[in-house]
Length: 249
Length: 225
Picture 1: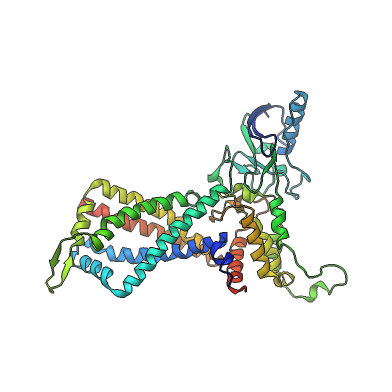
Picture 2 (picture 1 turned 120 degrees about the vertical axis):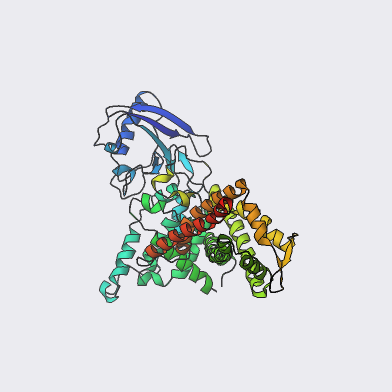
């Protein structure tokens, strides 16, 4: 397969970026999107051009690093996949593919397609933890009864890999899906209920400080989320924040 | 109670206010539509006494101030939200495929809201301002009451084609705003349930279609009759 690649090139956070166009040929339809970029980069190195900088790590859809906005969608046209799980067979031979970094004020570009998602870490630091001891000399796990529905919902929320596709996709660059998934995975379980009010207040406060946008409930985030995190989490966070705001001293 | 951050200034609080004022304005639409139905039946007397009642009855006066505040809050809050949403993405995407993952109305709430606000200003100037501060001719009813003849003013206004067309377009804009806005406000207030959310969505869509078509039918009817 042959493709024309329009890719965002930007030398550094303060530099002005722009689209550069390259051709790649002899791409196998079984290649992942990242492998196609690898081929492009080898070609660029031979031509003495700087290779395209992009984030990647596990290449099996778990780490959430491969942050590419492909043809106007986070992680490209596939559903429930990260960029490393996107295969070239999703495209047609001869296609022009536009690749951009995830764009948000809170995700500044480091270089080319690589962005700094440290804002997500700071949201977690603000409250995405439990203070109860969860290692060492502990009571039996089954000693605390947890309703199956709650355990399932908490687990579903916990599958969020923090990739930032929700922010990249959202027309407002809102981090509501990420933050609400992290709030939910803890507050649904007894160990997380203790700090639930404080947690939701602090995490939302940090989310606002980072400069993310607001939620218009378009639902685009849950469509593009590689892990299928539901916007039910956003409603849960809205609910928890409302009651925490009213009852907090 | 955390008023400074939690319920006033936070991003979530701004959305709560949008949802609450939006739902209140939805309830107003129902009352407003019912009150204006006499225009479709040509009941001049009924329409004029309704208009008289709405501008003079004390309880309605209190509710009307709540309505003005809601319109103002919904508009200003919406403007502030739109501004901070724009600021949250400084560099726009070269290619952004919005229709791949979200409905058209949900992506254009600010534009549709602005259109509705412009409509509202013109609408209130034409009728609300004239009723309160203008010189509308009065007449004496068979019961001996003196009524302002808002009915004739309204009928005359809608017999101008450009004015009727502007109304119909505005009502379509309002319809699309409600198509997303109604159910969205429930999600914002934290109401999302496997059993009830599908019902809320159907009710919201039916509401937006009925309200916009019913309101649009008034200028169309008066223009053609």
